[in-house]
Image (cartoon, rainbow, N blue to C red; front, side):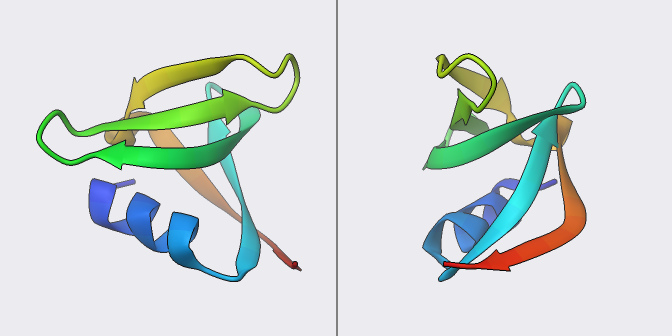
Length: 64
């Protein structure tokens, strides 16, 4: 995923499933200059920063 798409997902009204290392994460913030995305691991509630290119969007989408 690129950082532009990550930003779009953060700003949408829909909940779009995103995976990092095959685990679901919640996108919180994009660091434009570094190309990092702050994400919350939905399994253990840890917040980490990961490269946008390592995030994968799935086909699952939910209304919020």
